[in-house]
Image 1 (cartoon, rainbow, N blue to C red):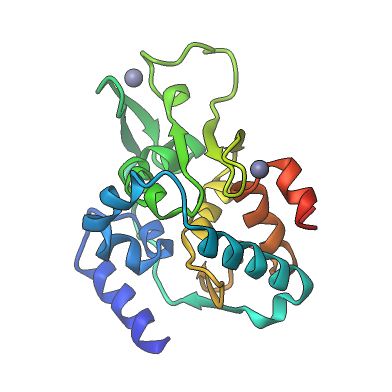
Image 2 (tube, rainbow, N blue to C red):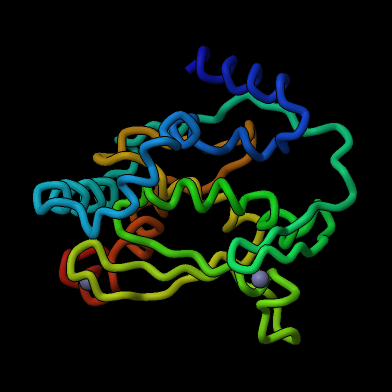
Length: 218
Ligand SMILES: [Zn+2]
Ligand SMILES: [Zn+2]
């Protein structure tokens, strides 16, 4: 754990372009980015994997203390830039946002999210259109980062959103490997999730409401 923290610190120190938030991303997300594209095409996980994931969710629901929650030592950027650019992955249009805003946090994570979603055990797609000045249809509404997930168990699609900076930061929880044994809480002193809420958080994003009910994960 100490080594991991050191690596994160070194990685940050070596890259001025990277916002400090990057430290909350799982290290493996970057290391495995070459293979992510291939696994992203896989329609679903095997039956055995499915069972193992559901059993893990049930186990951590019953006893969250079996999961080790730890924080990485990392540093906030002293002087973040004032603005950041959202490059629309659909049409390429660039839209400027305040760096330290919900929209800015989304803008800074576009490529990370597109790359990492392949690691989510249930096939998941993300819709950035609210953040693009060209693609956005509902200009009056608060922008939302929207996700569509194909239920791990029955493949039915369901939708969910990440509407705050906190929810954006929590997304890296979805990239854990199963069975879940440890969770990176990100910045020291900050908590992405309370241990008692981990099973619910993952269940609500991997399983449709009916399958959550069926497996006692509601
Ligand atoms: Zn666009
Ligand atoms: Zn389902």
